[in-house]
Image 1 (cartoon, rainbow, N blue to C red):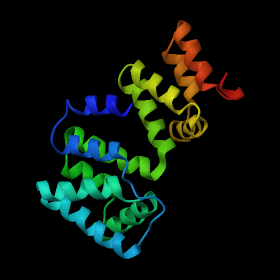
Image 2: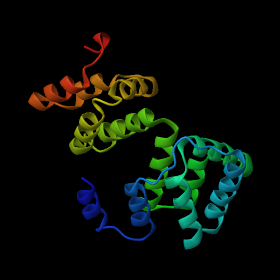
Image 3: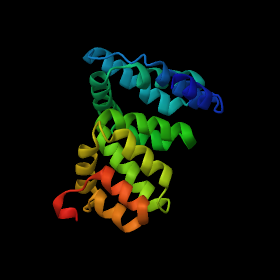
Image 4: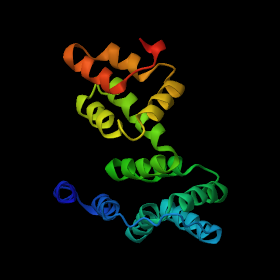
Length: 189
């Protein structure tokens, strides 16, 4: 799988590629959180959004890819205190393209992975005219991990169940297969 990922990354370039490589290496610290480092990291992230130089983008990538989830929670809060805005809003203002999307995906996954996947599923179903590959990839990849939580977040956020939306946007054997993976609640039938 790692070699496949590396082949996929080879078609990319710049900070986007560097961030993907950093994530693929799996160097994220786990379980470590230090409030003083969080304040320093938040200041670096704020400067990265203001300066937008290559060095600042490298620091931004290093922090988002290597700090523990607990550390990043503190960093995001400190960033809010320093800048007066949410880190996602700042990234949206400062960057664009695939690099921006990747940074936002990292932040959203750190905050709440099931909500991130619920968001991706909703967009794949509604915004792209039912983007089959995305729906299939998420449902299958998350089916034994946290699909129940994703379904719950989907329903909370969009006021309709994932089962309901699949039923209305898919058809035939494809619909049956997706619904079997999704395994909706009794009130969804």
